[in-house]
Amino acid sequence: MTAIILAGGKSVRLGRSKFLETIGDKSLIQWVVDRLSTISTEIVIATAHGETISFTSTVRTKIVADIFPEKGPLSGIHAGLIASSSSQAIVVGCDMPFLNTNLLLHMAQVLGDYDIVLPRIGQLVEPLCAVYSKNCVAPVQELLEHDERRITKLFNMVKVKYIEEGEIDRFDPERVSFFNINSRNDLDKARQLAARKGWLQAK
Image (cartoon, rainbow, N blue to C red; front, side):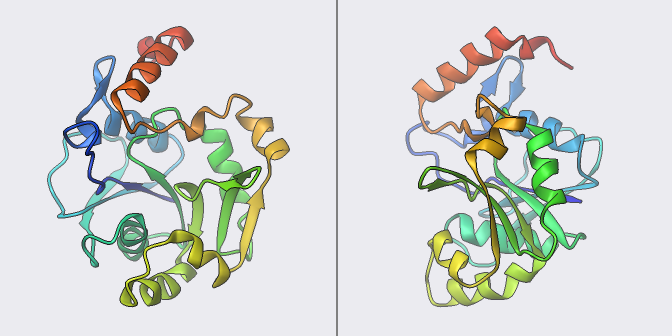
């Protein structure tokens, strides 16, 4: 199974690329790669310009550039799915260091005939911590060609299975999988959480 990491966003509030920020002695991108390497046979990192990113991985990795530049996460999903060697892929952001691999595996296992498996908490969905089928490539491209960047528009074009709160909490009761870093305050909270959980010492 492939895992796609979206690393093409502009980190305006952090002042530099998110994946360069660190928690302990590891960059954010390394945190995400380390989690995904345990459940994936391939990791695809989608960037805005195909830039070089420093990290180590125990599985095969590819860095790909967005085919539709400057069109947000939907463009990264598109490029990542095209580059994927698998029929389905986990899709996450590069700023989500505490991904729960059991939750991700569960979503992959229940994909079945659906095109997307998507966590939903109340009215909020988590499209950047989800599983996508390659069947999404054509509808995503159609959206991008019409300059439509909203991922939510895709949900009306494909078959979506929602993972609801009770099901999420079986695997990730604290819902730390969805902790993403957009500001210095978020980064400080992430460092405190990692220290409290003892994850800084984990190999």
